[in-house]
Image 1: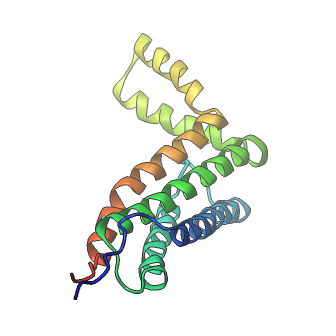
Image 2: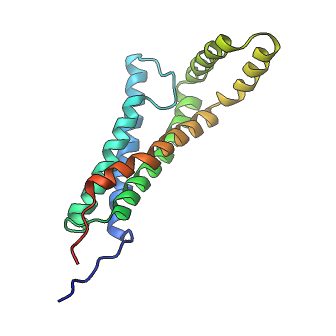
Length: 176
């Protein structure tokens, strides 16, 4: 008696979980930034540490939902990794777009705060002409588009590695 092996590919149902949870992660991260802005908490970086936690939570939830509801408790390492990775990448892109809109429309002072932090860090290590060159170069990277891109890249890098841990925890192959 042979058991039919499940495909190692991501199914359509997984994409439903990926898009839904990625959207929720991006919405919650965006609400967090708006809440910080309304309360008066300074936003000095493109991605707040709490936003990382929100994204990681939804990456795990996606893999777990796909395992329990979509695959009835059996998931391969590849399926678990891809579902977490795609959730993270989707939420990173959405959040990056939000940060671009936030910095360009709602709170342009974030660019100035980010520049001042970078200026202080650069002044510790450089002086003279080299300092002036570096500060001039940093003026490009504090534009809203680059802040949005930095948010995408930071979250995407986390999305590459953390699902590996989730995959090891969640992996449960169907016996043959």
